[in-house]
Length: 344
Image 1 (cartoon, rainbow, N blue to C red):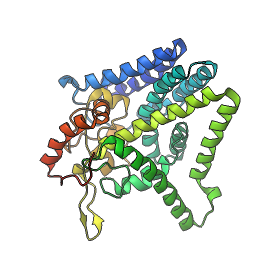
Image 2 (cartoon, one colour):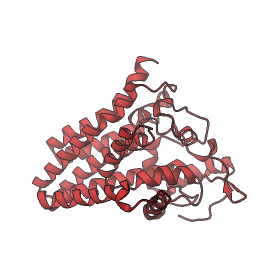
Image 3 (spheres, rainbow, N blue to C red):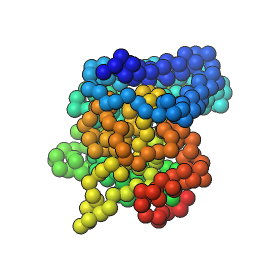
Image 4 (cartoon, rainbow, N blue to C red):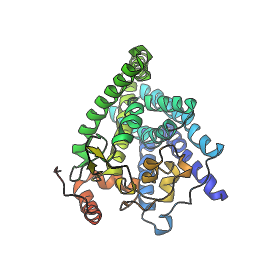
């Protein structure tokens, strides 16, 4: 394992540190820094020299620390954001600050929570619950692992976008469907275990989310509460947009009422080194679904369906359905994917 490969994941810390420092100057500076990061990553994905990340490597304590260190960093910028919002007088400045902080909590906080939630360590899974609770989306901890990983690339999965479905139609469907699915799965688990709701981490986490919002509003005022809700909303938007990208238009065929096993062809992949460095190799998505217990450093760049650019660039493309369909339809056609049954 080369030194450069080992240390590249520390680049992830630059995002919360730079946004936190900028927030002390001004909400508008923080928003500009976040926008700069998003544009920088998208542009870097267009450079041929940056199209490939280093090879997979064994998981080490260093790689696990890269994820765990994010928790205090995220707690710090959330604390800064809530405190600054409480002293603000402009709603627009609070929303600018929420965009900046939500860009961190969504692109990295949720991504790292996702990775920690796949860990066999109970402590890591607790950290994942905390990170997801900080964006008011704790039900992800049920739906993703017990729902999405079972049903990905099928029409039963609310987090899989159908061919011809725009991002803006996908969002309300996945938000409502994922929430319903999480509570149904948790109710089923409790029935099977013969336990009451007082033994449900989902119930406790949901209560904590409500309690935190009430406490922030009561102690620090409506603008602090607005910041808390708005940063969560933007973080969730980033999560669900990436969900839209990851399996768009791909579908496992059913035989005897059961979908085929998840394979290479059922997730979109990209391997741009800078984006992969700051979001823990999330773009190596086929390998992640085929081997969900693999640590992020161990994921391979498999030759599955390839995106036209990395996740950062796809955030911009997916936001404009005409652009998105223009680049994705030829790729789906080349894979032999059936024509859309839904429209934009």
